[in-house]
Length: 137
Image (tube, rainbow, N blue to C red; front, top):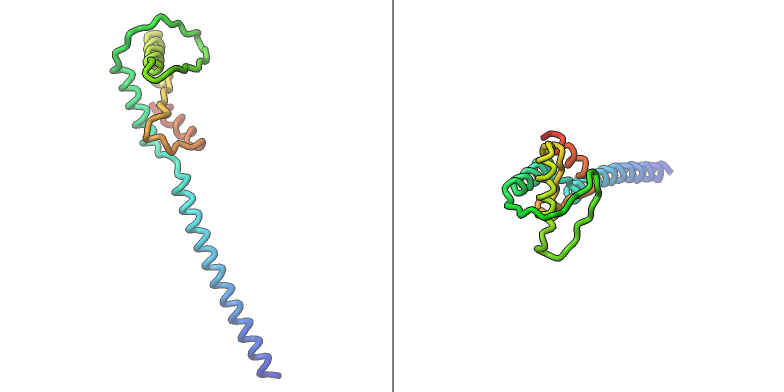
């Protein structure tokens, strides 16, 4: 009977040790999974967003624009659609220049090129970073 109790006690100790090892392994696997998820869903750095905004500002400032006779309403919302190379971007450049001529500065204008390859991983969470970078100007 004593031998049997000793065996049961040894088995329980082994089971407890195994369980502790299992929990340690499970914790490590959880931490690895969290790390990998952070990499997969990693937000875009503010430096990359800043570079995108600055390069677009330079592009707008350096663009040669042929003014088109289009009037935009103040505080109007527009969706500009058209075939490729029809002048949609230059129409926006013209509007930015009109706003600048009316006294607005770049810190009041947010122009984001969503087709910029540096922003391909842009997630919903990155909008806060975008606004932070814009307000830093």
